[in-house]
Image (cartoon, rainbow, N blue to C red; front, side, top):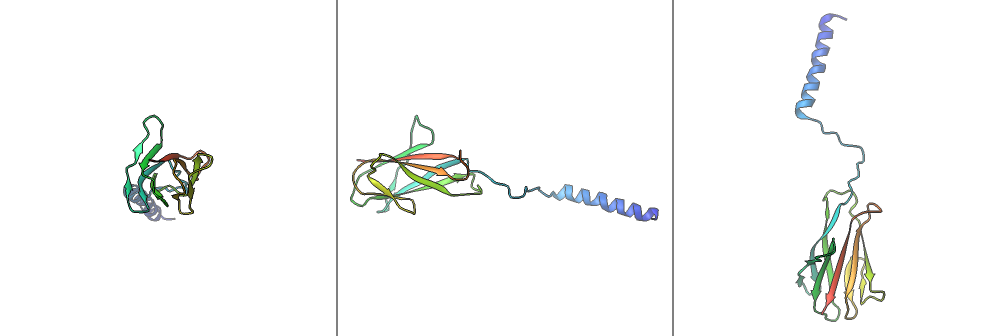
Length: 142
């Protein structure tokens, strides 16, 4: 090879390193999984459209509650955010934890439908890993 060819190849090589360095090509790991870190309630709305005031429990971490008046057929929908917003899996398992004979049922859409007067404890858990974050939510009826 001629010296000029080697010199041109060297200049192109160094130029490409400079261009990549300036414009940057962010490395993205293949199939990177971003786990949920937190579940936070945004709103709790009744079937009549009343927005309930969500309170944070003072002594229990990740525990929230609402207090509302019981009416027959009361349905409550709790809307929540996952942090970070770009977590890979956004599935959340919702379960009524207590009491053993709950005064409400949980629909497939995550709505809590009260069949009688009483309070209920619901747990929201991210399903992206076994130790994923959870949120406890109480609905107290007066």
